Image (cartoon, rainbow, N blue to C red; front, side, top):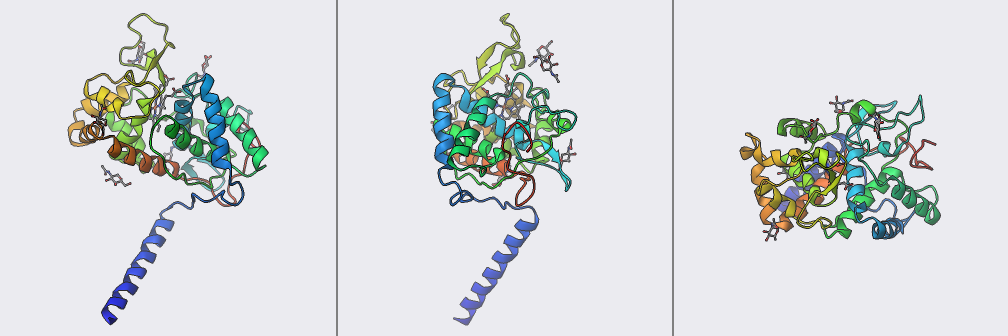
Length: 317
Ligand code: HEM
Ligand SMILES: *[C@@H]1O[C@H](CO)[C@@H](O)[C@H](O)[C@H]1NC(C)=O
Ligand SMILES: *[C@@H]1O[C@H](CO)[C@@H](O)[C@H](O)[C@H]1NC(C)=O
Ligand SMILES: *[C@@H]1O[C@H](CO)[C@@H](O)[C@H](O)[C@H]1NC(C)=O
Ligand SMILES: *[C@@H]1O[C@H](CO)[C@@H](O)[C@H](O)[C@H]1NC(C)=O
Ligand SMILES: *[C@@H]1O[C@H](CO)[C@@H](O)[C@H](O)[C@H]1NC(C)=O
């Protein structure tokens, strides 16, 4: 009896210690219920705008999912710190000299898209609950809803991010690139606390959306112009499923940065076994993708009174 209650007490102490350690290591202060009181319709509003946008542009769910990734991977210097983060910095337009847009960094220029839909989401949210939902949270919500609408997994999006008032063009230039080696990709992911499982799971997002032939392994050899679009997943182009891993196993990934997860000499002991796992089991892929998206969405967000809630996602207030 006494032993049981003392072991319960030490369990509680251990739990406290773990929670404290998480908090001091930058564990997420974000919460899935953040807007429950202030903007209960947030999720529905974002979903409605994306549903309507994809009627005329079936690529939109993929494009919005990619924006969240390119937002989260970019370091932003604030008066407090230099850290990577999901803070809506990718949405800012040029406002020189103070703001140099990330939209023209190599990985984004003529490539990142979906910005007008983000504007539409912001406008719809500001009608439902003025000044409440941050642009960074719009990207996190839009990514989950987009994946779900395309047939992929659902997850509870953690919310409460605030928007950056600066951009970081140097860091945007350092976004993962289609010609990066496996080593470099692993290092760029490790820098933001994402491991090999996260790398393989997140690249599974290349199950939908398009790619310009200039970035593909075939490199426009059929004579197309460099920007001509191809499906990332030739089998089920607009569906979120595990088919892209099947393409990889057949040596038919479009992006060199996808194929290296299997073909790099060091892959056999790192990423390749994970590719095989996800190719054989969609549920396993979905579970891991959802977990990795939550991890990615937790990359050093601005919270509390840091940053701001932008009025216009393209400009600081
Ligand atoms: C690991 C490093 C990654 C590299 C090197 C990479 C590279 C690329 C490239 C080159 C394109 C085609 C862009 C174009 O042709 O304009 C693309 C498209 C895309 N990427 Fe990635 N990517 C990576 C990771 C990710 C992650 C983590 C996600 C999301 C979780 C993602 C989601 C997408 C989506 C959905 C598209 C299609 C976008 C559209 O159709 O508009 N990618 N990626
Ligand atoms: C972005 O692409 C345009 C062509 O559409 C080009 O004129 C411009 O120089 C590019 N910007 C950067 C920063 O490379
Ligand atoms: C981005 O942040 C990471 C870790 O916080 C750091 O190692 C890296 O040097 C930073 N990169 C830039 C371009 O600021
Ligand atoms: C990556 O991290 C997750 C936890 O976030 C863990 O479950 C998984 O085993 C790790 N994978 C590797 C290859 O270290
Ligand atoms: C395609 O060819 C261009 C021009 O030679 C080169 O710069 C680019 O890296 C190539 N792309 C791929 C994916 O190999
Ligand atoms: C995808 O997942 C299903 C079900 O888990 C599996 O049967 C299938 O072989 C997987 N791979 C491909 C490439 O579709």
